[in-house]
Image (cartoon, rainbow, N blue to C red; front, top):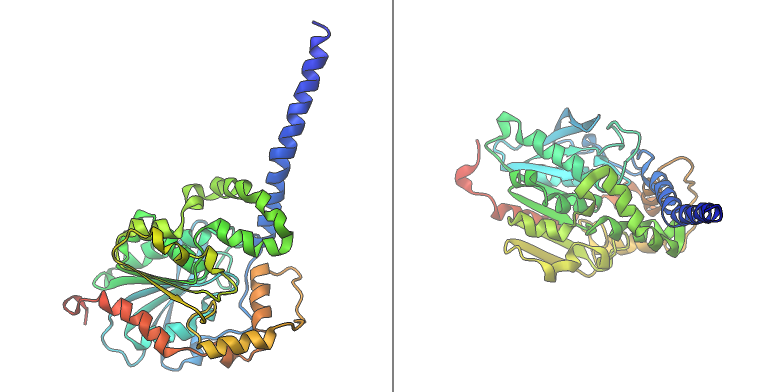
Length: 357
């Protein structure tokens, strides 16, 4: 018996040692990576626009609650529009804020939409110590749907959504939720399909190929924070929604690789009302003319950008580096033909007899 006790103690030490190596250490490393990427706030991008840059835009500031934080938002309309078509919720990408999408708000406002835009948790004017994590865009979008759909004066209008990049993932994956049934149609542009699709490429640039070792722990970490939202995917959301969805992506996207996109899963689609549009040369933004996209890429290719990360958010840093050598006007040139194609999708969902004067 005396010999067995030391042996048991030794075995216990081995077991705890193995657990530390295979579970505890990887979990701590994953938590540190997530803290580095999502624990910091995102401030307004160096190149941005405001509603003041568009004299015909009129904005109405509001706030709504997401978790413990108040999110800053506004409704935007065109001063010359007297009859509105629908309400359009806009969901921005990671590393930027609603201030990076004002040109698209202006487009939709001119077409007769009431645009609702907000800064996500930990972004720009909204509260929050940091972004928290990739599924946070789902949470904030769901709270936005509940907020807008609960406004009595807007209940006569159809409710649409337009999400890009992180917001493209957010709008598509949120379609797995029953709350998304309040929406009448959704456009998801340049979105990644799941959290791993984004993490393995974006975070892999900083921790190299070793990021693959973090996959199970990344999901476990996010499941602990977000529950089943962590495993929602964009394509499953498209299928679950069973209402009109427009999925758009470009094969030359350098930010969300086509292989990681919602669009690449087109052959898994079972939603008869889903439309997939795949481009060759529109880059990540999509709404910018292809020739301007090529110009921006050429302008920055091989150049050393004199910016430092410091205590800033890594996604914000990447965005600022990408546009540092451009003037603001170039960054926000809009391709009206492209936007018209998106608008045509939403126009199909409108019934003139249901519009509100």
